[in-house]
Length: 408
Image 1 (cartoon, rainbow, N blue to C red):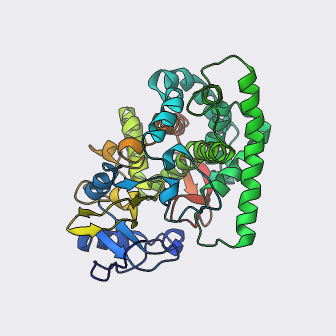
Image 2 (cartoon, rainbow, N blue to C red; image 1 turned 120 degrees about the horizontal axis):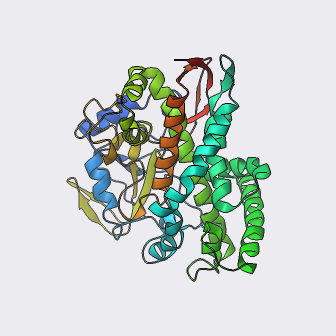
Image 3 (tube, rainbow, N blue to C red; image 1 turned 120 degrees about the vertical axis):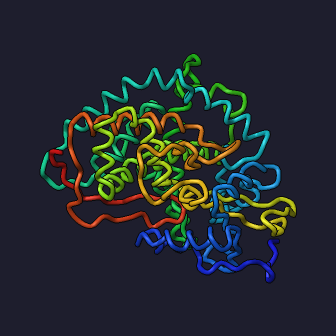
């Protein structure tokens, strides 16, 4: 049972409020938290009471103590929304050591440097082919036409999943990543239906891989491994959803975020044209600036003192990556998108410590190729209507982005 915390520093607003992200009003509340109470207590929210951790240093401090601050589903999971005991949905990012380590080791080789080098040519061909289909001077939805197809295409490659069924992947990813206080029976029934559809489809793929000799592809590694080859259904469901969401939503949101950043700071596109050596750093900078994962959550498994406060056993601790990546103590002019930022790689958009995103290299590679393609075609992407942002306190991005492609 989490403590009431009557003597705790009370936050001035609830930063889990979806409206802050839909309306892009999150900057000031987090700046105030960082300035006045980087560790703040929210006694009431649609998700229950929680601690906010809003500075870069404190987020890293909590992430570096996985034995104190648990990610495990049994303690509440990895989002501000408590995991439900009647809806088991376990995956390796929502596990503690040693199970987390065992399962992470299975999938890690699919994202190592040699594997990225092997995939780079295919990624370039797919991105170039997609850009070939885009019309000039016509209104298109950048999220639907570019960001989603690039990232879903990569998931299809990783999972050896049929391209013609890609819309199912998108739908399952959206359901799996949704964080909402609406836990009505109707919504849970729809969620369960979608997750079961996903599980049944992937079970067929896994059984095909089980019948074949072991190979280096991701699904084969999973099904032929000791740590993951005999997972119960709920664990298979959770891990499949994790890999789909991790490989799709986060990179998708960074790609869309880049269009927003270049619209707000058009000089940075010119700077990339003048110095293409900045492209790799620009990929890191957009992850910092956009922060496609707004938060991760931990739960204290014992009392622990931090930042002058005592976090009690059972307390929910929310790590706001979005805020930490705008921390003035580390990043000069943090609200500015700066492709030459010297410490851009110090972002924690991929997390920190043992739970740092296993697919970080793949995300960076896709973003680098994506930026290179925009530069190669010598284009600008300009707004052509109102952009709609994700109604989520968990993922940070756009649902619709009407734009026009024009010559630079």
